Each structure stands twice: as structure tokens, then as C-alpha cells.
Length: 321
Image 1 (cartoon, rainbow, N blue to C red):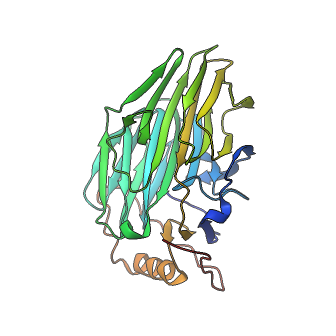
Image 2: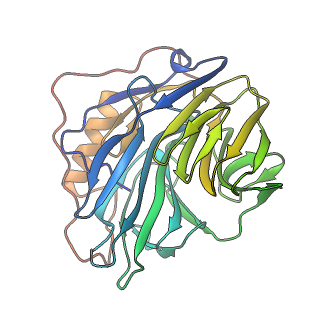
């Protein structure tokens, strides 16, 4: 999914200076962003004061939207660099196309994982015809410097491992949780999991104390470490936890996001992640000139134009790997 903000500003992300080294309960308020004609998203990352969680650098939550008489998701071809996109649905379907020639319908609780590496372009749209409701999350994972020039590739996985407890089913989307490992390729120590809680369930989810974590509320009402959460909110939890108490006041859906703190500092602008202003400037120029990112074939419409870079320069600070 694209960042369609026409006033996109660069963000400095990553680095140990942003990491809280102890357990905290920091409730993040989303920013509402219009995506296409009929889809509004709640953007949780990057957020004021909280830029990343592990290697997770971008989190949008959308829906549930009634799109029975609407076009639904319509994101024209656009570029990505230096990251992975994770598509995760609770309701509806999304048709993925990319410049590698991939054409894939992604359904609820199936993993669509696109690794941009050095450069890729893709589009996402609701199929025609499509179901009534659309509800899901779109997330980006920053690639470490050693892997950010890998060849682009796309993975689609319908069979994902689960961790279960009374009243809880945790589907491992990316990385590892309690000994269960996703088939999706990860480039840093990371975890992404879909948590389905039944009404009245109480559980304690095992965590890695070396990871930092956050929980995104997708649906229903639940308490995360005693903090009530409503859909569209995200709770940052910091590091140093060996378990996470969960309690459901109704059937509820959550997403657990975590990972080893991302030590490198990065620059994120529009749909690119780089390490310098030159990285970003060159990527924008290549997209404008029609080189490097390839073409998405089969999408009925024009590709996205790149917004203007803001004046001035921006450089990442601090130590890198």
C-alpha cells in the first residue's frame, strides 16, 4: 500500500535513542489519512514521538468499511525501496499486482509479503466484483542496510502457524512467536502475529524481553496489560517483558508487533526508505524518469506521480551497524 500524502515529509526513524528499555504503556493516537476515493486509514506509525517498533516502520489500519456500492481500495501503481510490505486482512479481498509480474488475490488471514529490496512497484485494488466489507492492516518493515539492495520478490502464504491457549489463537504472520515460525522471509529478529480472543478470555502471551513491542487493536474490546483498547488504537509496550496479559471484554482481534530494536537510523519519505538524502532524491528521480522500478501491467489507470521533495536536507543521525 502506498503513502498517498501529497505533502510527504521525510522522517528520521530507528536508532536506539527512540527505544524505551523498560516496560511502558504508551497509547498512540492515530492520524486519519484518505487513501483513494473511498478508503480512510488510521495511521499509527510513524507517530509523533514513536517512529518504529523493532523493524516495523509503518502501520495503517482501515475499516471495517462498507464498500458494497463503492470502488473499495484503489491504489494505483507506485514505487517502493528498502522495505517489505505486509498485507493482512480480516474482511474482504485485495488484488495485488507488481512489476515482477505477480498477480495475486489476497484473502483474510493470508500473508501477502512483498520485499522491495533495491526497487519494485505495485498496485492494490478491490476486485470486481467484491464483497461488502473491507477491513485490514498494511504494514512496512525496514530492511537492514546489509539487505536493502536484495532482488525484489513477492510471497503469498495461506498456511500460517498458530499458537493457542484457552480463548486465544495467535497466527504468526512474520518472524517467530513461542517456537512457531512464519514461512515469510524476515531479515531482522521480528514478530508479527494476529491475536483472536474470545469473549471473556484471559491469557498471558510469552514474549522475548530483548524485543520492543506494540499491540494494534483491530476489532472488539480488550485489555492489554490492563489498558482498555478500542479498534484503531495502538499501545506501545517498550522492552523487558517476558509475557503479556490479555483480557477480552468481547470477541476481539489484535495484532502483536515486535522485534529487536532497529539500531540503524533511516530516512523514510513517501514510499521509500533510505540512509541518506541522496538515496531518497535518486529514488524519486528514477520513478519520475521511469527507470529502475519496472512497470505494473494490467492495472486500469495511471501510475502515481511523485510528490515534490521538501526544501533543505535531512541526514540520519547516530551510530549505524
